[in-house]
Image (tube, rainbow, N blue to C red; front, side, top):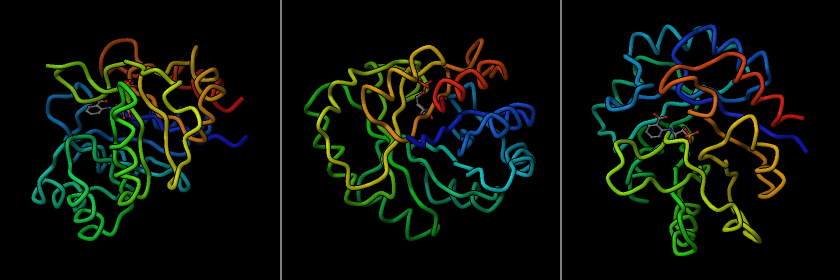
Length: 212
Ligand SMILES: O=C(O)c1ccccc1N[C@@H]1O[C@H](COP(=O)(O)O)[C@@H](O)[C@H]1O
């Protein structure tokens, strides 16, 4: 099966090159001040130039205002917006229309009740990112290296392309793909040696394990 890999939270051209060289189809840039992976606009713009043709550049934002999204999209050439906060379905529609970019909405799962939320966002977003719900009081709404119970996804019928995220690592990604039939996977902390510090060897190992 053809799997697409997204490596999120990249901050260095060498890691973009490692991801692209290992077959990743998406790279993610984080624009969220509280994240150890946060990028300044000028740094993101420079990093984007190092991304080869054919690899999609994704901006991750959390409850961003129009002014913030205007600044990001004005400075950085992008292929997709990842909304990773509490953006409402109406906000997803608004962002798609305003920026003309595909929107991937992250939905956090912890139990079966959350599947209804996922179904709702499938009606408005171009893609759904299925992540673990962050623990109460967590500093970050994602990028916590936490997995959810993949069995929640058994028997799900998807209207949109979707991506599996949350606590994926080079060690567990092949099992995650087999368990969920995910065609796309996303990783951030699982390819780091410390929060925000990516590692080229781990990036390559993740891609190898996901792509087979
Ligand atoms: O990576 C971050 O710092 C981040 C900050 C705010 C929201 C989401 C964030 N990351 C996304 O979270 C998931 C899971 O990450 P992990 O692999 O469990 O560390 C992934 O989609 C990241 O893009």
